[in-house]
Image (cartoon, rainbow, N blue to C red; front, top):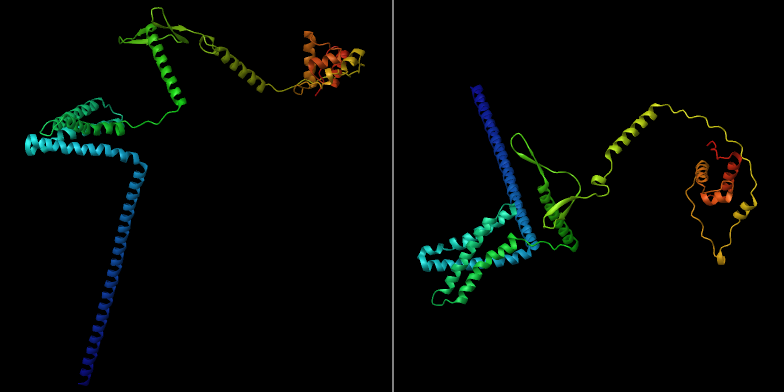
Length: 389
């Protein structure tokens, strides 16, 4: 019996322990759910705050962009008043005039006069910005502008209080809006050009006009080439021409020789031949081994004493009134081989006396020492022979 009671107490204790464990587990689940709900609330609140901040930043950006546009376009805002105010006045006037004529349906009269006029104005502006043709749009704009002006004039002129002055004022107000719109928007003001730009534009226009006149004159002398399809292809004689006018007033083209161009231009065939020969010579020198002959030793140079005339010529002259003589401009440095070659050339032409050092110094513009060396070499061998480098 006692064992049964103990078994029952043990079962009750185990059941109580299980209930406590279940309650703890449920409490832990509830705490986890509350923590997850709180975390979700915090995430949702953060997202809402981020969304509000993004909206506020976007609003500030739009407001800043609007203020920047207003600051950058003060003239456009002032001129828009000229467009908007006349449009509102003419719209209300036409609505009242239409109600007098057609009754309640007459309130739609501005849709014919004012709306059509402004529709053509905006279409003209859009076509101009897109680069599309706008001729007929301008015709429609000015036609409906005239219709609006006439209707407003009749409204102001008719009635008990009507007068010509009132009709003219209402017509000018109705037509002033589209005219101002075209002057402000559809035809924007150009920047002022400088005098140099205006002169350059004028020269370009004159050059284009002269080229067009020359092309028209060239058409008169063009010949035709007939192809197999029966079509004509115009052929022109190339060359350098000038525009002339005959005694009958007709323009013609006359050939003109310009130095360096046309018939007087460089001979390209000769240039091509020279380039070809230069290439062949360069290839020949590149393929040929460089073997230079041995230079013979130079003969000994005997010193020849200066003559009395050379000594007298070598004496510097006294300048007039004791003024210092201007030093002669010295040429670039030349080697002795170059001076010997120049002496041979000058002696052959008779411009120098090779037996006189003073004559050599004056003709070749060299120093006294080099002139004496050239004279001694000439007197020694009769010709100036090159010396080894």
